[in-house]
Image 1 (cartoon, rainbow over the protein chains, first blue to last red):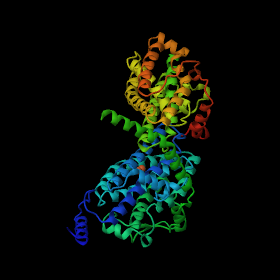
Image 2: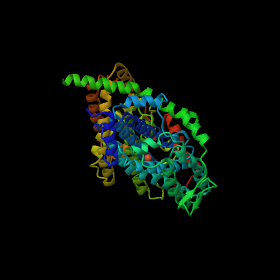
Image 3: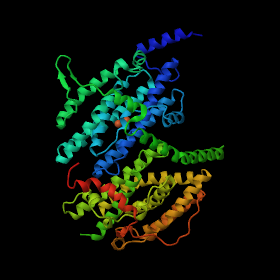
Image 4: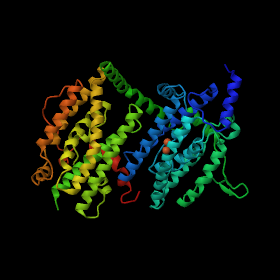
Length: 312
Length: 250
Ligand SMILES: [Fe+2]
Ligand SMILES: [Fe+2]
């Protein structure tokens, strides 16, 4: 019987050799917990993220956009499914995870606590929110836990379509009339800072970064990813011809990166704590769907049991 | 120009669009993630189908109108959809029963239409038939699951069937343009469809402890533009952007 220290050493060596950790492998309890937290948070984000966009399905301005939006949101539901399955490989079931979401114990990405007020927000969400998600998720395709990494590879393939459809929505608006351009600018004004917040607290205040980096759950720090996103997005905003709402935003020749202003961390903390404009609404919607679906899930279960009794 | 054909295509397109719109309301609110995906999927099929019918209408009319003007710029009385399609989702049981009644109609309809002598119509029908086979399997499986699940699910699906039954007769009461097309041998006679429909219904009811309501008075009018109060609200949502900002590209 190997002792704990030896196991831990071998585990770390395996990670350092870039070998994937698989569900049956030994892993430290802390690694398992961190992953469950992160993957379930990610799954919840996919599902809660359906709500702001779902809001606009019935009001999409034309049939083509309506169809694209439906397909996009359906993808997100699929992402939720892959991720719940990935989390289940760590020995926790989906019902427990969903209960944790509904009780407020588990978190989801705070970005979805902002309201989708205009059609342009469908553009901004695809472009910025899916764009930020891609930066995060591309990094996660090489994460050390096998099932998570594989789920990410599948998801990333679909995310680039999401970002493109969002950008196209804004492109159409920016080529349109004054009202459409105004709508586009207004959505950028509202979604820019929350998008930067998606990368989490800055490195100096991040509670989880060090451990996650050693175990290669994370491969880049929050600030590195945020910088990557800003560098990628600024030129795209220029093509659209709309202005990013940050006076400090400026190319820094020396660093080879854009400098940008300070995030309003007070707002960030408040939204994380549950005080964003839509926190209560989003959770209420999820709870309502879950409660009203209970009898349906019960019926499916009861029917399946009857069937298996008949066969047996 | 074949006026009757245009009305018929509009009627099929409108039923598809309105039902697609209704199913889209479920997105993000389904009873379980897998069924959320299924309903969104079916909604997508119906929106796609509506586009095909409208595009064909545009070709026939050849007056510069596009699919979006048809979908978004008409008045309530111009919509020729079945009343059943505009019935509110209410709960999962109503949604399933509504879907099942319509799928049981679309499968035999598209079977017949896929060999219509109108080539475009037969192409659209062939594509729709594949989708409707899948929808029918989904909705009929849920009919059985709910009917033969728990006491509560049985009560709910029975209630939904009971309430929606009066809307099912409209499918088989042909509007004048449908009678014209039957005479032109472009579409199947109503009796043939009714027989196939009743067969599907009976089979699934008997598997699922659901009682068939007795036939009574049918609610009709949708196919000639007289609707329930629900359609106005659907259109207010759906047409909002096009009405506030008419004639723009999106
Ligand atoms: Fe996603
Ligand atoms: Fe996405």
